[in-house]
Image (spheres, rainbow, N blue to C red):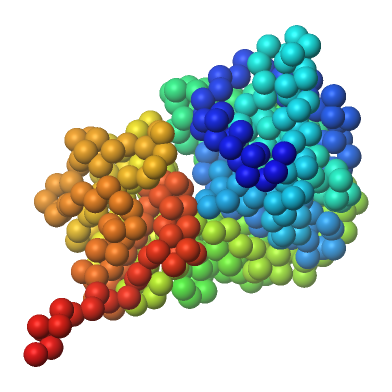
Length: 449
């Protein structure tokens, strides 16, 4: 198949959450048929509600600086599906994506036709198999894998990881994972395997206890970040923070993650802890590689500055926990500046709680939507959200909504685009294609007369 034909097949499968999974038998059967490419290299797996993508990006960056040819598999993508699969910061080329995807697709169809599997591979399973194949063909030396959702039944969870990381547990995807921290933690804990160390950033007591119990059952080492004495991070300017970290007799001073937000210190600490556990297993990861890896890591769409006058920030926060961290960042960094909010959401998200957290920060709100099946319409958001006394308007086109917010803003104002990674992706795509103007709106000719 050509690259575009592969994209058409993916599109026909619908969004990633559509296929209900009861076990990993389907993806395991397909990988067996493909020769088990996932066994060709060691891997780390990162689960959690928020922060797992950032942690993946930082750990992969550390491994790259340590000299390892590193594959990174993440989800979802912002603009192009190729973003999900990269090797040493280079996205998979179209032709290589098409080759690996075609083999995974044909294998899925063959097994289904033979009755080996009851259904074909899902959207996410196909992409996971594509990533595993691409990594094996490139002869990578290490893979960093982000769990798509949950953990126990996630397609990435077919690997035996050298280290597993669980960043945190918060309420999200309750219809699939359960409605309590404990039930969600049980799904995340599915990535814990016997004899392989676990790094946990869980803070909720119920979630922590679930992770602890699972590690006891698996007979594996557990490192809880909450139990480490990490000095309070200090501001490094631009919303970024510098921190010190000590583990197993090794000290790391003045670590400076490139990603903005105090909350990113937790994710950086998880990445450093995972690197330390790999170093204990014989991987050559120096202090310099850890420091440089954090400093050079890139993770678009998370407090990403797109424009500076006014300041336009993109953030994919889409659940209550992420909204709280984002609100804390905005108050800390821009408490004296006027904020305009461009907001969209998926209908299955907690719009009520998120709006209570974020909307009071804004002087004005622009409610919009994306062209995604799961997206809430602006009218749905208006019906469910709590606007209080904050002025709000509706614009179904996110590009128009952002342009209007920028045109209404002074140079020192902040325009925050948030609520959905799909919204962030739509804005980034429009920006890359030259369809988005963030400059001041030209004055009408009659105004100059």
